[in-house]
Image 1: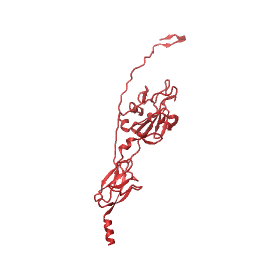
Image 2: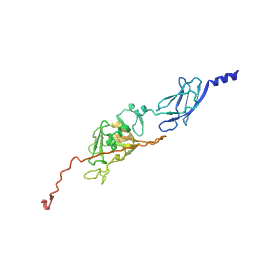
Image 3: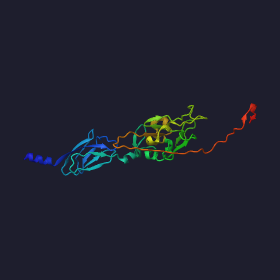
Image 4: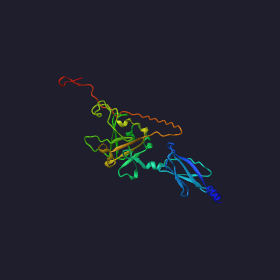
Length: 280
């Protein structure tokens, strides 16, 4: 009689196994919650994303949930192995932004002014420099380009000028590393009085390689960067390699034409002669 009852109990449950992976990079996800729908029966995935759960005979579906990913409910039917691919939640990515030193915070939890630009906003106009991509997209940020044309340096200020003698440009941080954004000219003096303008440090970054740009405004936002961030901080996060199962080819092109607005009037007929005498 006991053996008969034991077989009857075992017949009411069955074991379901499987693996949970990420749709973004195909990597296994440890710690994913696996729950039998409408019950308290559950488990979590192991270090390799594998799970094993005993489900009642009348169970209809399994619920998979993980922080940062969309919850999925999978019907059980007669399956003994259920592999699940979780998709990254777009809502969570929009709310999280990089503030300072690689720290990620929700934008609504910040106690200072900060603004984020995503990949789509930066690549909409297909500009050649990062600073031109920021023009007209960030409140309180002003971009002034030099007369050097394409490839020349630019002057960026956040919330106006705060110094009469020093630089008013913000600090640029690329993937957590501060960079020197000085104009590259013939003498290294910053493009003053006749030096050639070969661009600046931020101009060497390809806008197509940027994933997001966070502009930190005010002393509270840039306090972690010390005095170098007193004029504001522009935090740039570049794209990282992602494992994909399919091959994607992306082709981008840009074409622009620039013309000189006006030519300065030059006097090339007379020159100063001996003792100030004008010679023609």
